[in-house]
Amino acid sequence: MSTLNKILYAEDEPDIQTITKMALSDLGGFDLKTCNNGAEAVEHAEAFAPDLILLDVMMPTMDGPSALKLIKKIDSLKNTPVIFMTAKAQSHEVQQYLDLGAIDVIAKPFDPMTLASNITDIYNKHS
Image 1 (cartoon, rainbow, N blue to C red):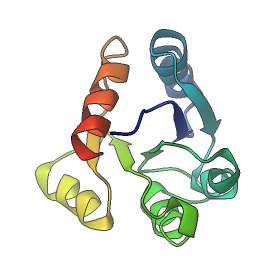
Image 2: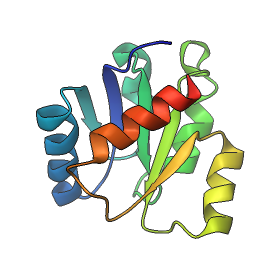
Image 3: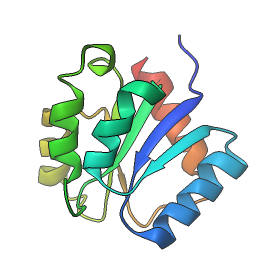
């Protein structure tokens, strides 16, 4: 089982970025690289070489599903697990994200106190 250390995170809302950074970096101890949209995530993903990619679904410039499709085309990242974060987490939407290749979906709003352990549990279940 591989260890989860580096997380690439794409989110366009500054408030949510701050809460997530606190939850994952400060509380969770992860090395977190934050991007403001899917295009930035695709641009930085290969060089950062994350263990996990966390994508907001709805972002300007490039949304999460579009970013996932491009990331999966990068050889060194095609097996990197991806989790979507979204306020739209109805079961048919969640299934669409899983069909795109995500390993799970975290609904917003999330609990910052348990986010790191939730992500670790999901990662371990799929690694």
